[in-house]
Length: 216
Image (cartoon, rainbow, N blue to C red; front, side, top):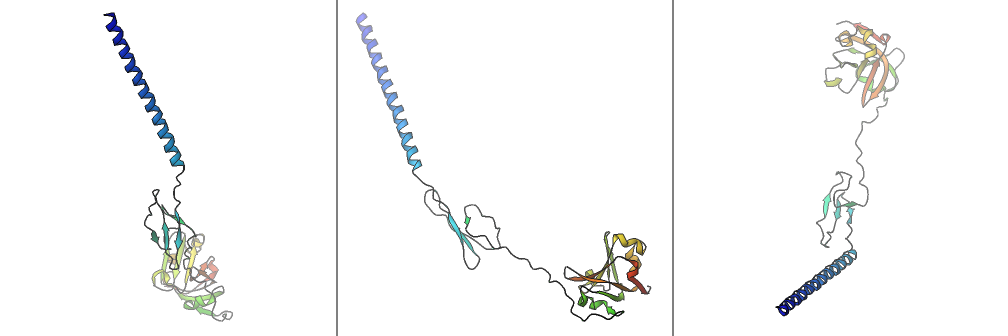
């Protein structure tokens, strides 16, 4: 019996030793594979995106490569797009800004009127920058709270020839309601003709500027 027990014990010890050796070899193999993979990834450079190019027609084309070396389809767009670079593109040159058109500054084109001369209101735009007297019948008024607009025409917004404005601090000079005071009256108004966004206007700040020629 004793001999059989010793043989069984020796057999178990041999199997355990073999399993330990296999385990050590497996761990060593995993460590080696990990180190080789790290070295391989360190030697690989990611391709840099290609800069965008802009041609004579205002088109901007950009190219980009994937990490595996294959090329993405070029991206083409026009100069009226957003100036910010889109995902996957590099803009080499800034896109030229678009200059919006603005109304040209008005200037006096007619001879300066003589002292005491009354200028037809429709000719006021020819006297930008000058202090003149205009005459006409107020056909349209519009009080928006802070400003009251007076027009000698029924065209929308008084047309583009000429209009007058009364500011809130001068409302009391005309009964608190200049839109009622002036409506339908023929008046002579003296003041400086100014250019406001391409339209000639005259500001009424004092009651002395206004002379009523004909009531309603």
